Image (cartoon, rainbow, N blue to C red; front, side, top):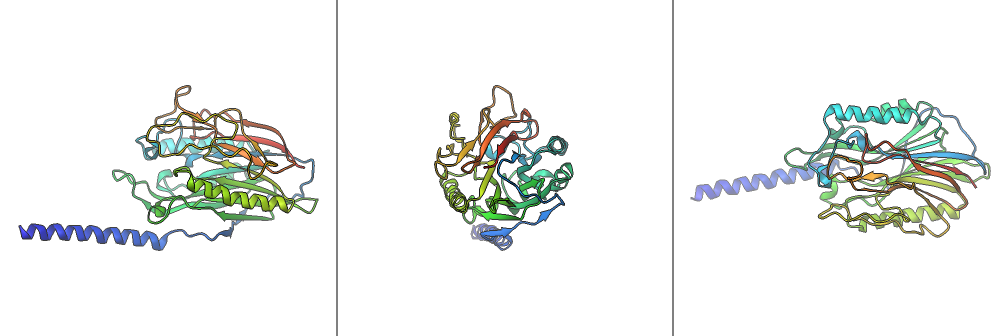
Length: 349
């Protein structure tokens, strides 16, 4: 019997050592971004000096790494599947790039969940076909998810993930900057979760001020506290821009219900805490711009129109004086992503 206990002890010790080694490796290689980092600019779009009265268009879309099309559910949201089949992934990406190629006249295209080297998207650098679909747009990329290995689920680990935000513009920015937000989780769970950020691009205006275009993707899998911290950081940034007299156009996946939209029915045992964006943010002078329709669908099961629960969590925020002409969802029937693209047209103050 003592030999049996000895072997059990050795197995337990080996398991502890393997776990410690695994966490140690991930800790050493963990992505630790600075509070503010320059994002490289690619492309040769022309320079432009923006002016009061200019009409501009913006598109936002969380493309779901071309992995969450209509046929998909997702294990982390209560479904069963981990990633699409390779053929599905290729078809989703083709649909995304075909649609984006039709947006050549859109001034700013702000995308979330764009993969560069992830198991979930078959290690395709999605920036390449997307930038090729919009060859006249300059682009910048900011990492917000980089981990060597996600062990969930144990039966089919999620694996390596490298992805983030991609901002494309028809005008050459003066500067493109990644700003750190509070990460989704602390160590050790934080080793497998996203390092949130927003991506800011600055353009000159004839007034001497700047046009600031911001791409963001806030936390989804938290109890609301992490997202509140991120909103506080974002508010501080926006108020500083307002104080300096700059014009700000901000959009992306807020993972919060738009202020004027009804809250959806809560899901039992849902991994996401449903909350609503504050009506006055960062103060009463700013304006939300959301489409009338929902923009995101639940991933408990494959998409079924009229049955699958939906919500509006992708929309814009503009600084005082900006006139919003139109905001609309571009209906893709969730064919290629669990989010729908949203388009906005504005006139600068």
